Each structure stands twice: as structure tokens, then as C-alpha cells.
Length: 74
Image 1: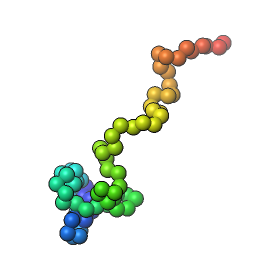
Image 2: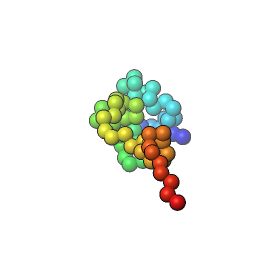
Image 3: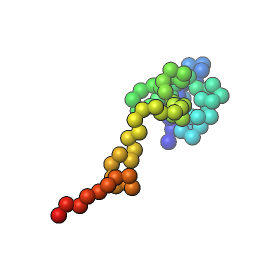
Image 4: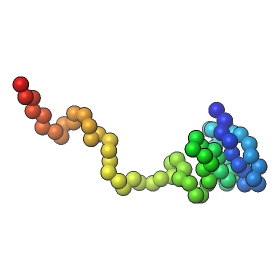
């Protein structure tokens, strides 16, 4: 599947999604189209560039784990 991009010279085109990270890393892409609009390189957050998450971890909060004491009421 192709993705719409704007190159550094303001020309637009379409590239294969697999090439996007490569072209960003060599500074050939100025922005690319997401489902919610244009993502500007250096301004908008990009996948894989977030670093460590310091918020509350919501994974594993629901469902059985070995840390909970379950009590069956009959």
C-alpha cells in the first residue's frame, strides 16, 4: 500500500509504506499523510521515537493473575 509524501523540495509523490522509515532517516521526506492529516517530520510524533513511557501501565490490570487472592462465594 502506498502513502502520500512531500519531499524536502516540496514535490509530492507516493511511496511504499516499507520505504517511509528509510526515507525519513536520510532526511528526504518533509511530511507524510496519515489517516488524520499530514504528519510533519520533526514536529509530530513518529512511531518508534517515543522513548520510555512514564505513565500508568494499563496492561494486565484486568483478568486473573497470580498476584490476586480469589475467593469463590457459593
